[in-house]
Length: 61
Image (cartoon, rainbow, N blue to C red; front, side, top):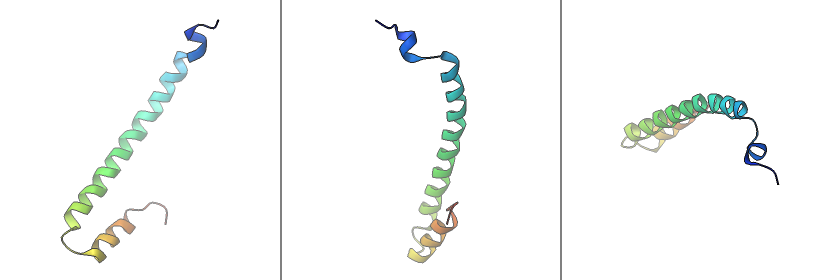
C-alpha cells in the first residue's frame, strides 16, 4: 500500500505552484474589481456607455 507522501508528490512542487498561482489570482481579482467598479459607475449612464466600457476592458478582441 502506497503512503500519503507517494500519493501527494513532491512538497517543493506544490510550493512552486502556489508561488505562481497566488500572483495570478491576485491579478485576476484586481481586474474583476476594476471591471465591477466600471460597471457600477456607468450603470446609470446607459447601455451604449456600459458596452463601450466592457469592450475597452477586453484584452483580446
